[in-house]
Image (cartoon, rainbow, N blue to C red; front, side, top):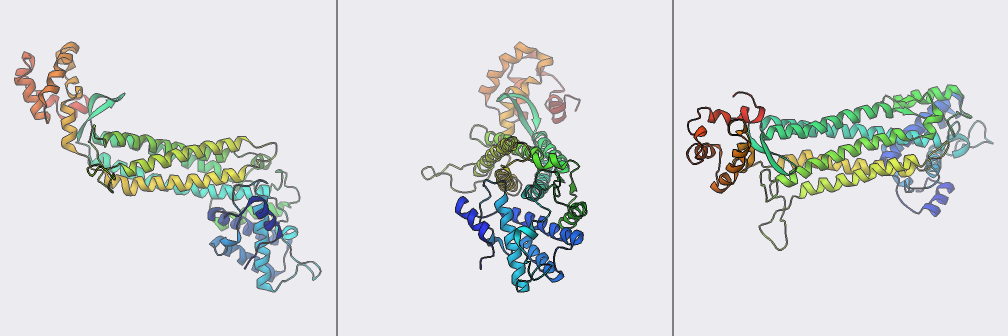
Length: 452
């Protein structure tokens, strides 16, 4: 059965068919339920039976029972007016069905979507409140996913705290460090992502509900404004608060742009991390390969692809692009309204979907699939300049430069072979009987510069 009416039909003829996303339907349902309750408590707008039917209809919309009644694409002109018309029409039709078409204050005045369900409201305060509510939940979900990734990286920091590896700068071998230190460094940006998202969430909790068309609150009694804020907070269980500058809150969307930028930075950090892993897992280094997930080639049986790494990187690039677009849409508002809020909302949902998938893939699939090769790490390390650089204070800069080609030619496998070669094959007298050679190439000395 079709519950939406003629205004939704007009919108369909202009916009074409689509589907309003579930997160926004839920948020708009909550906003309308809060508004209905505030209308009733402040103005007694509905007969009691009809009021209860409206509330139940709104709850069903929130639950997702009528998503097929919201056939409009989110990307649309009109600042979301078509969506507001749509939900008002559906609410009235559902309530009419329950009450047999119950009338309003008297039998001559039936309940209508615009005269009643939109009373004391505008698209400009209800739709924007819905987008903020939806985005607040997106931030909550992304923060929870970031926490799980941070915990996984910190676990690696502990597990690999004694695994030596070559530290590299500018794609060149530099100094020894531990794989645990690398995991700890990877955890750092993720910790900052967690902090950023949490702080942005605090700023995003301000809503424009009650500001109506331009933020002045035109036609909305103060009793309604206060009640709507209180009801929405109770319905959602979220720490929402009415903005103290409703004209600003209706006109500007920079808080949403800031939220998108924070999530874009999270995606950028994922791209950097997986970019590192792409090199560590490559045939050139082979130090942190991932187990084979699937056949890697239709022509090369012995090739495995870093599919999880590439998936996360591709999703991360998409998220960063969407975050940039949210910022652009935010800047394109004019005067007292940003008409591009539906487009902005579409990209917030896209960010949520893609970043959520990237974070889940990182935590649930990629981290468990990593198979650090300790022997390969040590072999690469002892044949690099990194280990021998630690003898600079003893041998001097130029001597170190002459040693390196000879060490590489020796094809050494581990620190024990390196120490033996330095003492027996290098021809350098200072190293032959150096009693603290084991100490010099020990874990603590190599990674901190302190005494073992």
